[in-house]
Length: 264
Image: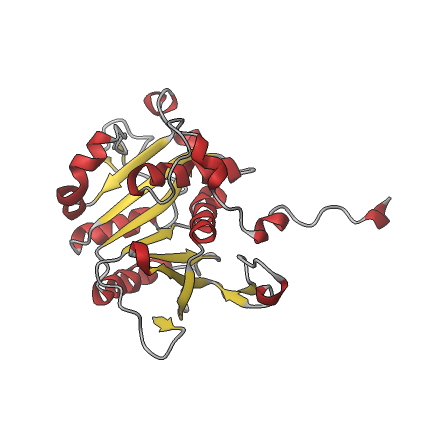
């Protein structure tokens, strides 16, 4: 599944894998763009898979004319060895009925590559929040049992809120309670598979609505930063580091190229 850029596969033993879920507002993918761009992570390979819609485009993190013509595809892997971070960026949607096989292959690769843990950045429909969720922070987290044992004390110190259980079938009053992430794409599948395979995984998500989701992506990246300290804040103000995230060059055309003057 993983194809390295070099002649041999890089050593990822003990690394933390960061990845998005293709979810509502593409918030996880936008947050990954910020992380990869800010840390200037190097591309180390890509995933060769038939589970994603094929796509190709220019280098989304181009910094000069010289590297702007490099090509990118639907699933690429970046690394920052000095911080033991590896990032998977997904850029297209899943082919029907292929999302679960992708999750199984991905988690198999996580085990064989020796990655220590996985952190999934995701989002969920805000319009399906209950009253309690609407009155509290829009951020939530989930930890697999094996992840709880290693980071539970750190997470508690951050005063984060865990994703609440809700009725499996909302329309039925006596339905059982379970974890539901409407609009979360592969998030729930990844979480359930990681629980059964005893993989250390954390899910960080934000309740959002479709639209201009750049502020949501900045918020989710900052939420992750509270834990991993990817970038250092400029001051004690928790919002001060938001401006330190490096916006990738590809975001200039996030909403298209504008109206052509010839129309007027």
